[in-house]
Length: 190
Image 1 (cartoon, rainbow, N blue to C red):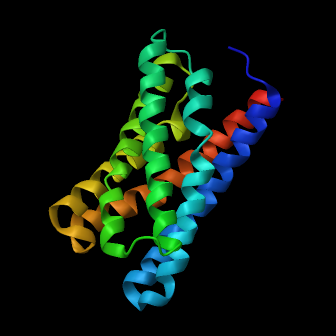
Image 2: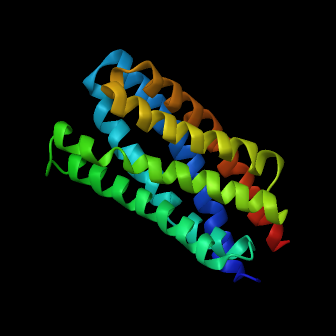
């Protein structure tokens, strides 16, 4: 399917900017856990931008990657979008002071939906030949990182070593994937 060039350009920039916001979220998260609360609010705000910038990715990739199974493709996009929106909601409520940190924890498992979507979209993309190399392997690793982070969180909260392992996986691999995806979508315009 041919996508509107403006939609591709917006999605490309959203991918690039979500990569940058993910790096900022990773760095401020490290500073929060090592230096203290001063960086907590910055981390929360950067994670909102990270997620908001990801919003165009599931629906556009559902259109961009032909699978032959449109219902499955759109179900995966719905899972990803739900994970993104729930994450934005939880972090926004926290930043606005509508809920405290303890209450915000119930939103954290939404990252698992995002991880599942990343893995599925990469597998769909590999199967169709649309994704490969840097638009495949880092995405699979980032998806596994989201799932690992949620698993660690459920096992023992944000102090669990598996939580940190997953955060490192996704914090490094998602920006690579998103930047490669942005480049791929931009090259489609040329």
